[in-house]
Amino acid sequence: VQLVESGGGLVHPGGSLQLSCTAYGFTISRYHMSWYRQAPGKDRELVASISNGGISTNYADQVKGRFTISRDNTKNTLYLQMNNLKPEDTALYYCKSHGAGRPTYWGQGTQVTVSS
Image (cartoon, rainbow, N blue to C red; front, side, top):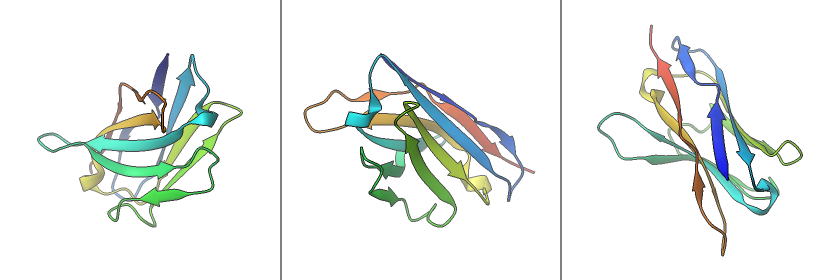
């Protein structure tokens, strides 16, 4: 059982990236899914979350209007579209699966660096 993130990289301010998180060994359709990030010297923080059916989403104030969380349960994959990236978005981004009565899984993280 694992979550594998991909899509991170180095991008200029104002640029875009799409992160993916694919689950192996379990089906994400029964789980709520979230993206978190952790910058050096800071606590891990919630970026966005999406309900198991994809109907309900929530975003941190810092990313509202710039990031979009989505999921494709047929591909067992979670996404985070990040637009208008800022240097303060630089962090290691993690995906998490969770739900009432279900185990919580974390991915290993993918690095996003926003720099000119």
